[in-house]
Amino acid sequence: MSRRSKIVAVIAFILIADALFGGWIWFQNQIQGEGPHSTEQVVLIPPGSGIQKIANTMMERGVVESDLLFRLAARLKKADRGLKSGEYKIPARASMLDVLGILTKGETVVRSFTIPEGLTVAEAMEIVAKAKGLAGAMPSSLPDEGRLLPETYHYSYYDSKAQAVRRMEKALDDALAKAWAGRDEGLPLNSPEEALILASIVEKETGVKAERARVAAVFLNRLRKGMRLQSDPTVIYGITQGKGPLGRDLTRADLDTLTPWNTYEITGLPPTPIANPGLASIKAVLHPEQSDDLYFVADGSGGHAFSKTLNEHNRNVAKWRKIQRTGK
Picture 1 (tube, rainbow, N blue to C red):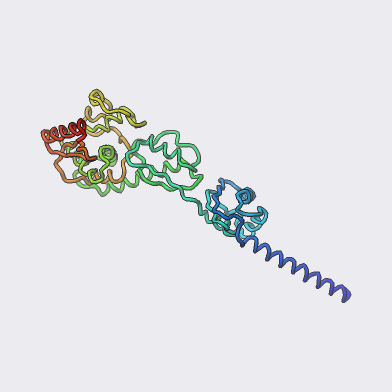
Picture 2: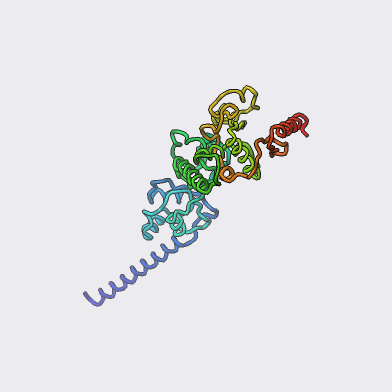
């Protein structure tokens, strides 16, 4: 090779190297620089999405300007096979590398639904079915009554409905087992299931937190004496089977109609819970207030008047009926 040819080769090498270096700097600026989106963007990445689909989605949402550069950046960072599905909030002006980091770590939006205390399983399942973002079919059959723990549950988009229900069942199983293990001695209850049944009745009888342990004591005292529980919510459950509210007042005929749950007609506990009790009601049954009360009735303030004797109870009932008639 002549001296002139060597000089030309060196110059060509320098130019190519300079171009490559310049291209590399440009590429780095593109993937590290601010993104084109001026506001936070919510992006859904369905399960099974490959890098091409993810890049297209990001470009369609205005998160990146080039799907090609996004794919190159993902491959450069060896992230193209590690991007996770889900719902993401992409901050305004996030760079491509920022976006890749969010998807690689799986920093998905945390959603939640709440199951209030006292709902039946059928009512609770309606909440799960309507929870936005949960995927798949609901379980083909309802869980047993009372076997879902009322709580706020967190989930991510595309989590399965069936999995959510299993979490709720496990939460109840774990909470009940722990509470039963620490129960007071001498309770007239033979199993955690019996505690759950009574807790569901307590849950439906009072919405006053401070009353739960006293209401539980009344029912436990009645069980010890072989008295019928005479709980209106059990009558309602026998009529509705937990599928919804009764929608009317109970009648004398309702109280006199035998169902497996009507505690005006049966002795002892009904065969199943009548709702999903909260942990507070479970604890109230397992740690009841020390009391000789055998009766309670509404007192017009949202709570109840308690009594140890039938005569005292009848006086309280008369007061309540007067309040119902006169409003005071």
